Length: 406
Image (cartoon, rainbow, N blue to C red; front, top):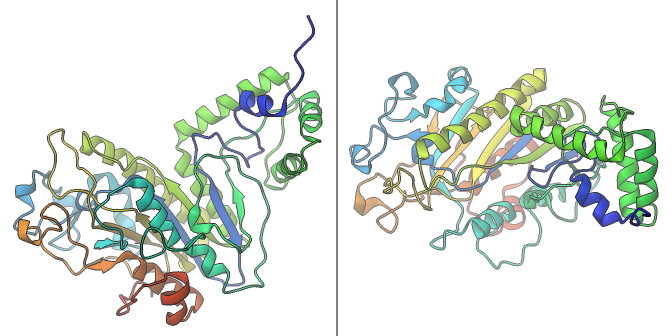
């Protein structure tokens, strides 16, 4: 019985993933890069799922904290006599002590009341003031558009999650370094034949092969097409066990230590409706590992690096009946790097008594989280305040400089 004709779409679906350290399963997260003439670096990490700021940076010094049903802080994780850090971030305590890690509390985007992950993330990455604003690109891309002579790396990523924060008219490299590709010479030829009638896929395949070699990876010549798919799936499983966030951060550091200057990626797992103690610890472990990988991989360039970890909104002040928290409003932002003035929790603290909570349920936002990103870009790249408030973050009031950077 003759074999069924080869179909490009079926080939991609059956293979599950295509690339040479430049492709990812739809289950994994894409990463975006671009190069720039500056010597400073900026990394933006989107924490998808709404991180509970009160669970990460615990305001145990607030007299109303204990009544919210939250766990008591570990004395060893005390930060300043009022706030304590979640024990899952213990590996980052040396960064805190060295002034390379800090937090911003009681902040949010302008998003209010609906508490939808999709809308909240879209607004966070678009950087606009409200859902429905005519903003089709992301705030990092609008930053790039202020520097029209930027050069870029070019690659192709296959992944489910899109980094809206880097979408826009300015060219940006998209790369997901999640799995190495094992292909026999026959499979490589077959893939090229399958793709040759589709210029976009053909070019992407050629770039993937080339990038694997230039990135220091090699393409192993063994097995059949069926074995190829099995090997790629095994690679993906191994990558997930090792921690996809760590691997992405390592790859980001390699590029940022060279010609790239801005990177953005995301970490999932922050939607802690149930058993928050366990679930939050897992997500914080990924974040901690990613930050350590960035520092180690960047080497001397760490001293010129700022990392901002931002989430779409916070969670309810009170724990719910299943030991979790529900969608809220204000939350926390993390900042790190050798270029930051860390060892501090920056906040205009609103208090936790019920009358001080937003809608009597959420931590009240006291400052726009976009302002901290804006001041970071002003300090790192010399962007004018008027450009930040009108173009990059439309409708933003930067207010006073919080002194995020050294």
